Structure formats: structure tokens, C-alpha cells
Length: 147
Image (cartoon, rainbow, N blue to C red; front, side):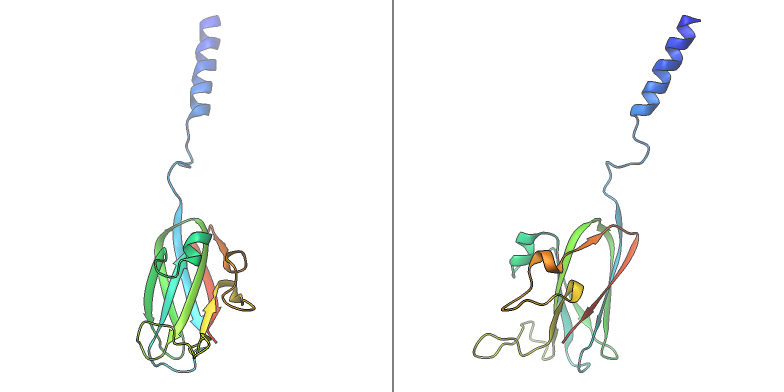
């Protein structure tokens, strides 16, 4: 009888240490980003999806960078198999399709732009904290106003 109780105890303990939820594997989902407010269908929308404060501040190499065509003054992108985590989106309407955010002589953008959470900075882009959002769903839709 003691052997049976010991065996059951070992068996139950063994199963309790197994990881059935596959937390070791990074969970992923689909992020859908919709851009609204473009004044024309000219050019395209350039986006930078950033996954950290350092990545957000680096203007040269986003986590994911894409160019999206505009149709009916809107643009949409679906990013599949994106690992759950914190992200921020920076985007601009590249009306002349030159791959650069055009600015005036003072460095103020003359092409429309937007950020996730529709965040705005006072003198420059909003902070990572203001623009970041938590991605933790199988399907998440983020809408950004480009103006």
C-alpha cells in the first residue's frame, strides 16, 4: 500500500512539473494596422513598427519597415506571426514616393504623419511611452490617423 501511495505521489508530482501551456514558445498573433486621414491617394504610407524604446528612437532600422499603397485615402497592413509584446508605430504619407519625410527649412514635416495611440509630441515625435501599445491578442486592430 505504501508503494502505491508513493508511486501516485511521484506520478502526480511529475505531471505537475510538466509545462502543458507551451509558455516556452513565444506566442504570436496577427496585427492589423489601419491608416486613415490621407488627403489623397498619391504616393504611399511608410511605416516603422518598433519593439523597444531604443528601436523607436533609431530612425534608420525599425523592427519592421514597410511601404503600403493607399486606396480610397486609407491604407491597411496585416502583419502575421508577430510575437506578443510592446510595440509602437511611426508612419507618414510619402506623397511624392521619394522614401523620405519631406520637411521645410526648419525641419518641420510638410508631409502628413501619425503614431500609434494617435500620440503627438510637443516639439518632435511623441515618446515611446505615449506611442507604445501592448500586443497580446490573436488578432489586434490598431487605427492611426495620418494628418
